[in-house]
Length: 444
Length: 57
Image 1 (tube, rainbow over the protein chains, first blue to last red):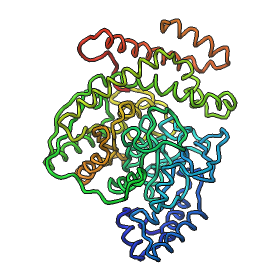
Image 2: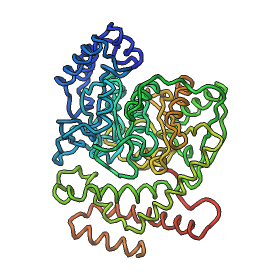
Image 3: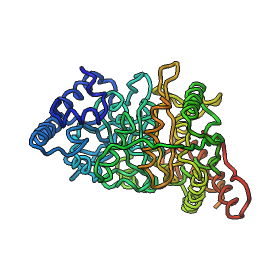
Image 4: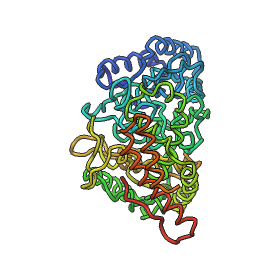
């Protein structure tokens, strides 16, 4: 097995365009990698034949001068919560799946850009969890340490990308489900601004919190995928130049961190400062109410979406997912409305923290990837539920809609990845990516 | 409806539906609802300063 699968899209695209490499080679390499790590459980469906056929077509088209851009002939994967024409959208569940009549628009746009769908990736059932353990396809294991979770809910996507199986993946993020597994596996995960990437053809978890975005091994690759997902022309981004200022919201977000996570993130912040960027301490007002607001939005929206399935197939859900969905049925409408009002206040608080800043820097996860089977983790000398700990630094930006990206920030002495999160102004995801590209080489 | 009366009727309903495992989750939700209502009340009363809340979990 060569290192081809771990190269960047830009590098490989040059070879594909010049016909020094074929898309068929890339797909075969990815398939070999899947076979070499079966214990990861990264896939719910591997689309060997169709991927090879698409690769042959891409090679032919490129050979005839029909090169479509940097994603032409590039194998990617799709979280199995998103429709891919003619395949079941299982959502990682035993609940009967729908057969997708068509590609979700986001998948169609990636195909239009020339990307090849290699398969569908495993996930926490119905995206309702952070560890990708509750799934009908077996717990997704972390490629760095297979005794640990790959994070979730887009765990299969992150594990595949980290292992060099495909050059990127399409994930979804309702409370951190792109950024959390990206952080756990040591890759890049982008949650765009709310509403920026079409959620049609995607099984909803919480319709006002759901986002779709890319996971990749670099910011540059994530940018290419994001552009295609929006239907824009695909082009390489330039890292943001000049003086940049970052806000560091220490209260709440840095209060409780696992010790080595804190050490890695403080080192990353020092490197940012040493690179000549300015850091200023900021406070996100009212951040401590985030989990309460989140819970009273996410639970009832998820229960509403699942009401019919739950009535018919309750016993087919994983016990934990079913209980969370049942819990949502008891949230009162008045408390949902209270949450929506507080949501506006939180959004304004993040906007204010971003004033005079190019972005906010904070942890993506307060802990490294947890052991599979763990229900509690120790964070800053306090034991807390794994799910609550993993959501604690990401869910605010699903509520507020600000774009956010998880960036690799080194490894602890345990060898496990740690991750820094960059948050930018709403509606300015393209700028966030440019700023992230400037930071990427500095912090890692 | 007070959180207390909501919680007792929710637990009774969950038990009637054969879901006793929901009880601890509903108790957690009740604590969160109380925090949410305190924050919402503080906003509507125009209390200055940060809203009541908890440390990150």
